[in-house]
Image 1 (spheres, rainbow, N blue to C red):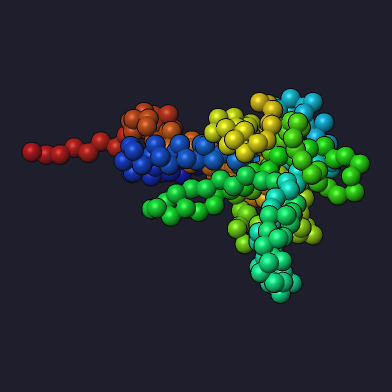
Image 2 (spheres, rainbow, N blue to C red):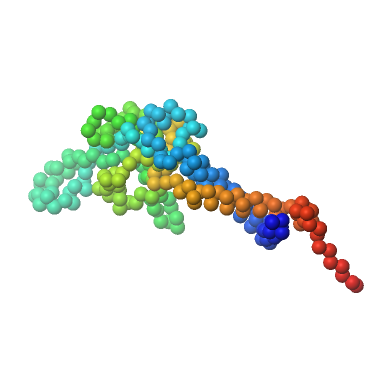
Length: 261
């Protein structure tokens, strides 16, 4: 056993210092930010708990579950001029005078969300969408027609949404759509707060962000990954101990080779 430990410790001494720091730091970070939280979640809860927005707001952020399903959430829908409707065949069949008379008068309700874009090599792509949610009212639909005057305490972020899904609001009309996600401690602050404010949304300074689409690692996998990451981090740390000291700690005497001159 001691020989195996010594061999592993010496193996991790082979990479240079910078590579060891990257390897050990990466393993420790993954364990602390991802594997251990998911393992803790799996050991305490079998399924994401269902909570109302009021329950989320009243729970201290450091006590919120890692994964949450909202049971009473609803979105806002904004009324916009629907020039896109002019592409429909029924409207195309109208006379030019009739179409011109209708232009700007047709309205459509569209789900309210904010698109975050990134620019890489002069190419602009959608990186995520954000949409504030509000406690459900007595409305038959799970939307409100205006968020004016309302303050959101929860914002959902989806980095996996695509522009194709957002077309014609297919994303929000999907039969499997739910208001759920992972809470990793992120609050609505900084650039995100500015983005939402400029888009006309009133969002609490303490609003939490749920990462939609993120699901917990399975129990067995989370145990394995946690142990593996901590194993790597431990032996990388051990690799910075002088070799002679490692030998003595493990009960070995360093091998001394005598060279005749």
